[in-house]
Amino acid sequence: MKKLRIGIIYGGRSGEHEVSLASAASVFQNLDPDRYEAIAIRIEKDGRWTLPPEPPKTMKAADVIAAAQLDASAADRGPRAEPLREAHLVAHPGAETLLTLSRTAPQSGRSEVAVSGLALDVVFPVLHGPYGEDGTVQGLLELANVPYVGAGVLASAVGMDKAVMKSVFAARGLPICDYEVVLKRDWLRDERRVLETIAGRLGFPVFVKPANLGSSVGISKAKHAAELRTAMGLAAEFDRKIVIEAAVPRAREIEVAVLGNDDPEASVPGEIIPSREFYDYEAKYVSDDSRTVIPADIDEARTAEVRALAIAAFKAIDGAGMARVDFLLAGDSQVLYLNEVNTIPGFTTISMYSKMWNASGLTYAQLLDRLIALAIERHAEKQLLRTSM
Image (cartoon, rainbow, N blue to C red; front, side):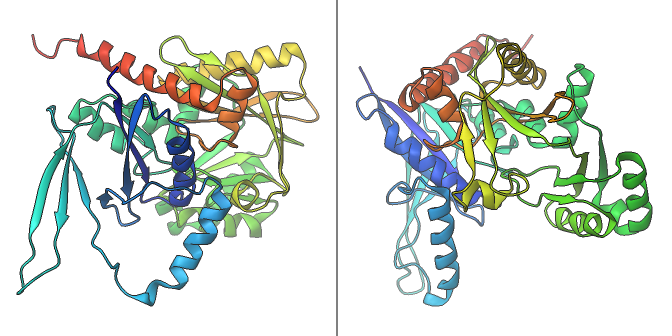
């Protein structure tokens, strides 16, 4: 059987660039080489698409982050010894998915450019955050008419924007906590009015988040007005839209992995027990002190409830392929709140998404096979649609 050529896109312009490298390393090391030919496509932090000489190999996000910090501190070492090989997606259907450009070193003031084409059977975006998980890359792949793993343009965009996501959940009658949405413009115009509105409407404590970011980047917990002002300022550095949520008392963080297209399945739930006050960026990727419990220590009825709600949330945003659905379970009232859907969750072998499926009987390698098959299935269905009268 002919191998499928899988283009794995990773990196990206967002603050989750390093996390993406760790996720991609796990994908590369677990794809069956007898079935797939893996092509590494790295998006640099400045947005350039490149074909690196080798795929990423470090699968632990903390190690990738530490290495990136060392690279940043040595940025004055000079330019790369060899120019990067560029990759450019062909934004229309055709036999070639990518054009690759190799530039020679300038000689006599001129450089030569060699162009070649590369066909891909499936694209696997392993991108976290804006400019990758938010529908932008998915839109390019739709124009190219190539099968790709994961959610489409709409679900990706809604899954990235926490404010729009909550509106969709509310319209479907799904349980969410109280929240406010503030534009950066309004915050800068009248901080006092915004602070008074949030305190009066939600009280304290609250969580303040950039609407369009993941991995807990830019998220703070505010227990009083002074902390709220600081938290708003931080979130505004990352997004033009800020989401403020009422804190769930003594919250337990319950997660469920979803897999499928029109008939999705839910994994056993897991629980995050953070090492810090909440599961922030450091607790997720730097500290080793946070714990995970899979399956989560909840009874059968609550397990069935979170799995059903996870599928309902997935369908509400028109999800496809995969998603991790996060919940907050109030420690006092035991009320369950839907927090968010992540359409490209952390994807290392020790990430919650893969661990929950492993606990449900699906290994990491089998999970990759399923996701690629789902991408091909969804693409084939779309090819049957009419595009003209």
